[in-house]
Amino acid sequence: MSDHHVVVVGGGFGGLQLVNGLKGAGVRITLVDRRNHHLFQPLLYQVATTILSTSEIAWPIRRLYADRPDVTVLLGEVTGVDSGAKTVSLRNGMTLGYDTLVLATGATHAYFGRDEWEPVAPGLKTLEDATTIRRRVLLAFEKAELEADPAVRDALLTFTIVGAGPTGVELAGIIAELAHFTLPKEFRNIDTRKTRVVLAEAGPRVLPTFAEELSAYAQQALEKLGVGVLLGKPVTECSANGVQIGETFVPSRTIVWAAGVTASPAARWLDVPADRAGRVTVEQDLSAPGLPDVFVIGDTASVMREDGKPVPGIAPAAKQQGGYVAKVIRARLSGKPAPAPFKYRHQGSLATIGQSAAIIDFGRIKLKGWIAWWIWGIAHIYFLIGTRSRFSVAWSWLWIYLSGQHSARLITQRETMREEG
Image 1: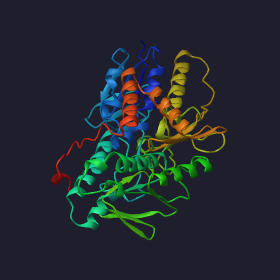
Image 2: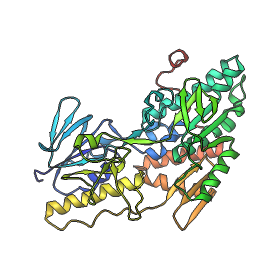
Image 3: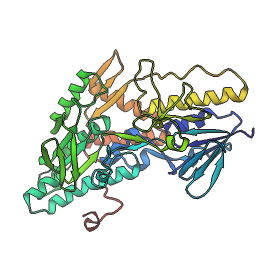
Image 4: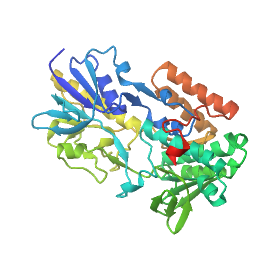
């Protein structure tokens, strides 16, 4: 093994793909992440909506690299980078020297300057976010069961999702199905079928990155499930009592934010140009401007496609970037010519609407309905890590299909009504 030290910050799709791509390269790798697990984010909303448990979509990073002596895994939070000294600083005071640095630090939810909304309108990026949303959704029904005031009960049974991208659409569909089909027999004082799910989008249509006909189908499918779709009206206020959407105030005690993201502070660490969302504007080989030994990938990077559109912040894009940078590093170490500039290959866009329909946009080929849902499910099961996870998720979905019951309806973390209220 050579003395070349590669430090990778972030154990998401891009970071892991890069580490996997450097297997056998003869370098020392240190992988740093704030959490001890890799998360399969595309199914995170299913944890938030009681379909899957946390262990079905997350895996300990140490376990993934237990058989890779070239990989050292550290649980820590990066607070800064000194590109001159080629060091990375961690919050615990530790400093890591590097020969090559890869920042795959992801993104978090953006409130467009209204960060005070976060306590009442949590976003969905981590397992903690998912279990928080799940707790709030389930407690809303429990509180409504005890509530005598009809107005308060209606507000408790109104769920508002802000943002109609894939996450917002998927959350709205599953919450509606949970209320209308899974829970009605379990409560005595309320009729959960009267639950109101509101999906608010400032733009003109849901799923704006999909073809218009698929977007229209998704909206129809949501409305068939009883979801109220409000388009073309921005959210101007979020509070514990509800949401102001345009000129309409919606009394709602449970709000979920799915309207935007902002990148990690990587651009500030490196003191390099960034786009409006804080993503580093990288070179064609995904290195940071003026820093050839520092690469930025995934949601932290602003990468443009040949058609002038940005590479989407989705898992396949991050994996392609991680694999590409691994090739660049290998070429440099072996003295071989560098690979051609990074070129993103779009493999299609997928989204589900509840447990009965989905849409898939492969460009020329567009699918919707049941067949799209089956393809969506097979694709997601394939990309899960390990046979156990694939079997567990497949079984959970089959059980819900056959019984209509969600298997992860547990109120965890702060469990009492007093603490949540």
